[in-house]
Image 1 (cartoon, helix red, strand yellow):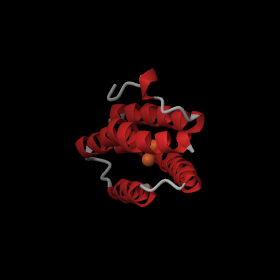
Image 2: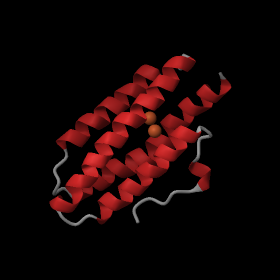
Image 3: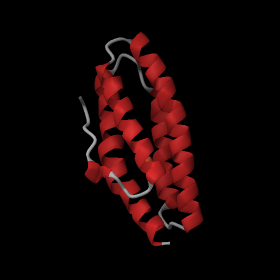
Image 4: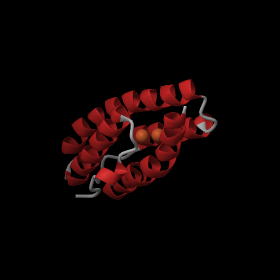
Length: 120
Ligand SMILES: [Fe+2]
Ligand SMILES: [Fe+2]
């Protein structure tokens, strides 16, 4: 297991929290995948998850007038680009990207945004 979900990771928005949990699960499934054939379908699920998740977060930030929206959306866009660029053979790069996303982006960037949204 690459990343372990903890209750304290919840940000207080049910939709975001459910999707972050799903991201952790996908991260672990991808880390356990040994071959490109195993990885491919998981990446497809991840693309779909990501599109839905970024739409939800960016919509909430927009509605709340979150001042950090542009910067946050830029990270999302960069992540999407890196996802499409990933080599299915470079497991270390995939793990690094997913850990940064699951543990750093959700717990710092998303936490800031969720706190702002909750106050509105
Ligand atoms: Fe997120
Ligand atoms: Fe985010």
